Length: 213
Image (tube, rainbow, N blue to C red; front, side, top):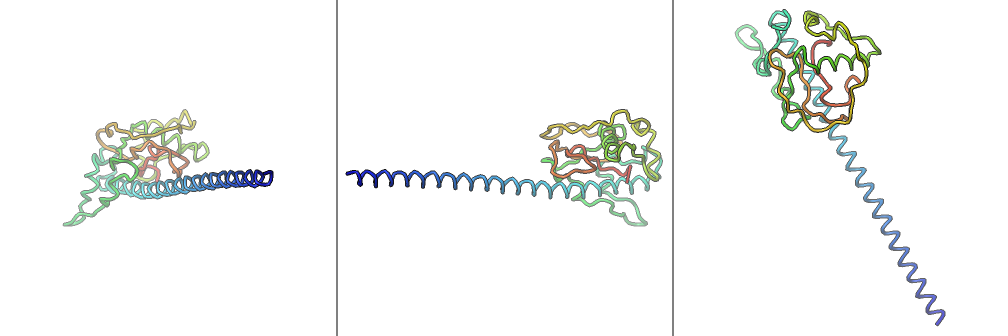
């Protein structure tokens, strides 16, 4: 009887250990699966961010081309809509394409629309402050023929606050575009980024403009 009870208890213990081991293995597999899923998600977001930077800088280059075509005479030489860039600029009897149709769409926002940023937009002032921090305290200045725009951007004259503007964020910006001429675009995504762009770690802080390029 004692031998039988001993064997029975031993069998129960083995089944208990097996159950614990199974639960442990399943828990580890679940953790690995979650980790893998997060890595896949981050990699997907990273690729979209790379594409957004690529497209955004194409928009910035197109704005510069349009600005030069219009005479580089300040705000009045800037485009007023994305269509101005998509239509191209006259070159002889034809038109020179300065922006691909794909680049006119933001891959980070659900709407696919870039937010157009005017010269006096708060987004520009915040971007200037972030660039100042990134460069170690030296405020950026417009380059080349974009210098005529410096007078309409107060932050070019006096950057008072160079503190970080990054906060916990999410969702999308549904506000209207700046009316009139625009000198850059930014994403409508307000999410934190996987990558950084000039040290900026949230999508709507990435202003793509020819001002400092």
